[in-house]
Length: 79
Ligand SMILES: [Ca+2]
Ligand SMILES: [Ca+2]
Image (cartoon, rainbow, N blue to C red):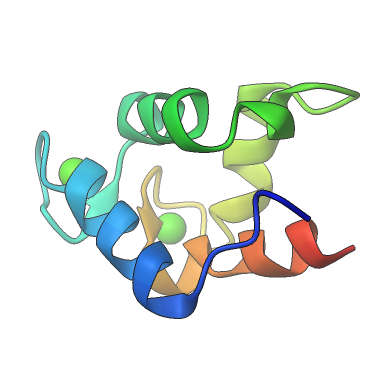
């Protein structure tokens, strides 16, 4: 897939957007929105809304997405 990124690229993309507000190691919903819209707009086609994607990624339900949680996007993209 054209959206496939290396782990290093994913890490630098995550850090770039996570640093925008609040905790620099966590993505808020607003940060995730910017990240997805800028880097992976194709993820928002089909059935996924940003809210459902955020909830799916935020496995521990603390309202932020850590890099560990963010990595489940890899699996999504390789499907
Ligand atoms: Ca943040
Ligand atoms: Ca979380």
